[in-house]
Length: 172
Image (cartoon, rainbow, N blue to C red; front, top):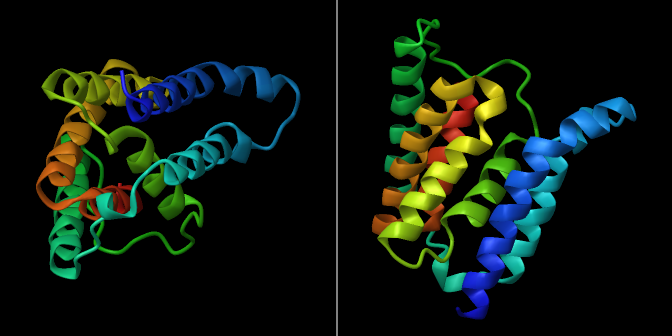
């Protein structure tokens, strides 16, 4: 196993473990909700940045624009399927951690995929990471989301998958 693979798997395992175990522990100690998910995700994303070659992050404008449209459409489709109101404008008071956290998730979960099995396992683990948000429905939804995001990363680069993720989060 290469050093990049090892680091990638450690980052993913830390993200899953912290996300599923820490909130209950932190809540009992009255820690601010930022540290339940956003803070650790940003810290792990920063670690991933240090280990990701700059050539892996393509930020081509036309590709990112298309990925943003896909993120918007995916969010609207999922809202429609879950019988939520379709929204055309983002919320008036957006969460300012939303974009950096989505980018950090992409760095943790989409960088350095080492084959089809790894990509499938990564999508499934990303789905499981979202279990607290809605149980089995959230797991299946986010596994599909991760597969689409992985396809974008493979086809167009990390910038496209990050844009897709940020726009999806903004509208979902």
